[in-house]
Length: 229
Ligand SMILES: [Zn+2]
Image (tube, rainbow, N blue to C red; front, side, top):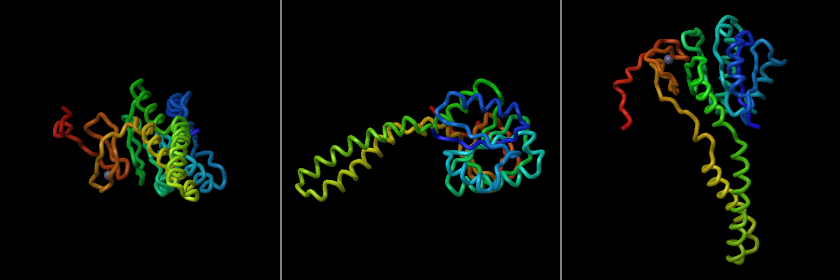
């Protein structure tokens, strides 16, 4: 089962519960890693967990901000995730702004604990579900392998049949994988570039919000944006 590395403070109980309930019943496991209880040595543990995960969720909250060492870990953690190309989702509760600068952010979500947010976060989680994808990858490989074998025997070169079967299997898997890619359902937010030069995607319904990277306030005039027709 796919895993999402969730970093948070166990003291932000309501936030943890809110997200744990959303993960329940999904085909993606939320690996809740608490700053307070890193297994020793923490750097190795984090590196392994982040590597195994499809994405990283950072759940900001009052207690993440309170403890100074959590900031150092957070910095490093997102660095590891960014190095291995994982999406880093930062979730910040509306009107409970945390004054923490996070160096690596792919997506920034400002939310309230309401049903709409549950639906939205569920969609994000589902988009990392690889169970269906894996099944169709295998199906694609079988079909592709069959075609490759036939083409190989027509050309009459026995030794090529194996190689082309492998190629076709890969090709079939690619097509099939793309068709059923769960990442298509992933909410993508709006691309933004802050004055601090950081580019990431925001998921907000606000005119004002703090940049999670430099913590300067950003103002968006939605009216100036092109409308969908
Ligand atoms: Zn910024």
